[in-house]
Image 1 (cartoon, rainbow, N blue to C red):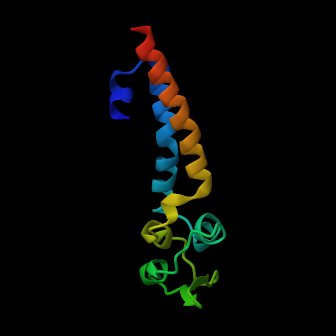
Image 2: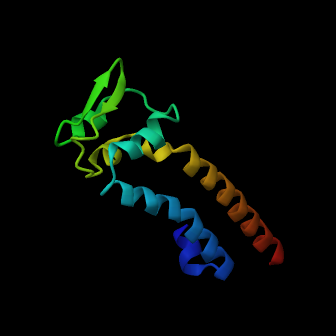
Amino acid sequence: MAYLLLEGNEEQKELAGKYLKPLMDLAKRGTSGCFCDLMYDVINQGLCMGCGTCAASCPVHAITLEFGKPQGERDLCIKCGSCYGACPRSFFNLDVISEFENISEIIAKALKDGESDD
């Protein structure tokens, strides 16, 4: 990716930027957000493994584990994003995975087309 951003043609640079955008969005969520983001992106998509990292990272103890599933107390949540940033599964959001797969295919095709032009 870094090579494409630095040395690629304009189309390759644009594709690399699109590829990295979901990562930048995830990085932003780790510094602000709320349990509802974690609920939507991880728990409701069946990605939560019940490790309790989100509950352990919450500075105000707004998250508890009940039967291996995180439960958030919205009234206590200070929307700091620590639960989202700490969750080992927050990166695996299915929307992000789909976007990566689509962009990866486009980049692979562009690179292959670029090789055939040589």
